[in-house]
Length: 181
Image 1 (tube, helix red, strand yellow):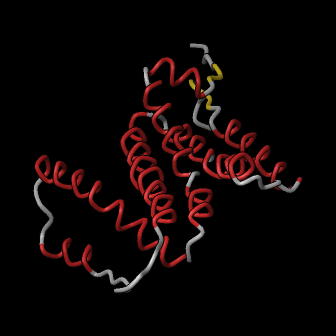
Image 2 (cartoon, one colour):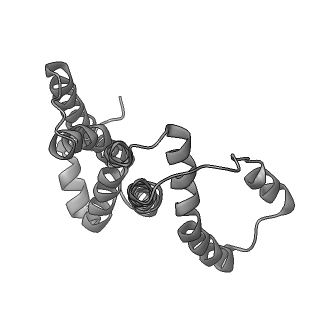
């Protein structure tokens, strides 16, 4: 029997597997994650303040998802709760309303929407495709910084983005029907 070898791109795999929605979900999630730096810069708040509020503002939304998940899979045991609660935070962090708005947007786009989309759809695409799509994050950050913050990327950053995209494409090309060598 003659071994037949065909080259298939990730696009072919996605189309044949019917995972277009999952691919879009991961891409949107990765791009949502890439908004973090831009939105934090717009908030113009100290790092510890923006980090605290970003987590605090994402918490109620994530609590709803955790509650829904616990109804499906049961509650955490005491050990799991202990690890989850071993976090501390400063008691007084002042922030103005504008900064709080940008940080809230960061919490929702990056902390909630972005990572939930990635987590939701990753199991539905080949791992090479998921990894390639997550490489959109630094590229998206650079583009958003240029578009929203009027930053001017250095030539090496632009070259880096081109390399990331080329490597992502190369890594996402798989061979089907090979002998496994």
